[in-house]
Image (cartoon, rainbow, N blue to C red; front, side, top):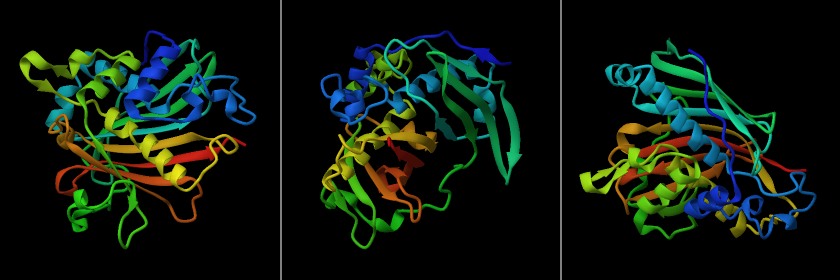
Length: 292
């Protein structure tokens, strides 16, 4: 069945918590420096794209549980979670936000089993995001990626280019406290994922992906990008997450994030989060646009 979930709104504190938890230093989220952005059409702060996707993750989880779809996912080994969204307008503090989840569809596409839902988000009466959340038996994006040949990435300097490759490397560490804060910033009960008394640690799907923003900002900063004169915003995310690997993640585990611009696609990046033995925790195509 179609579902209209309860509306909500971000306040500045939610945005501050999200940007601090993910090291996102984009001026669009900074209450003290947003005005430095040249010709900022939003007239103030805007929420993080991954923060909004985290809310969607939580709402879809409750939808799956309510409709007894967790058993379907387990039975069919739908071990990949996929987010495919286009951003159409910004979400600002105080905007009334509504999320609509269309009924689930189950199908086979190119020998891949998919359980999917169309999702749309409105904020302040305007369409802010539209796309799909899908569970699948294999990743839906960047399916041929393989980094088993790279060797021990821990031996390479942080914030460096891979030898004989055009990938930028950023080393991050998974952190329970940051993940909990990120969940709070997206109206999600952290006890679903973390319960110290029962030794439960289960990172949410979007949190490790949200660190991509920091990596793209770091890469641009090293190349002397002017964030005040030439700010950029997300236009689309296409991300596949390996839930089997996600379930094994613990606090302080190393996450190596690789990003590179796709050939002949300006401001479009392929991004990977690698865990032990260079296994791919997530893979995604992230597109941005210059604000101008």
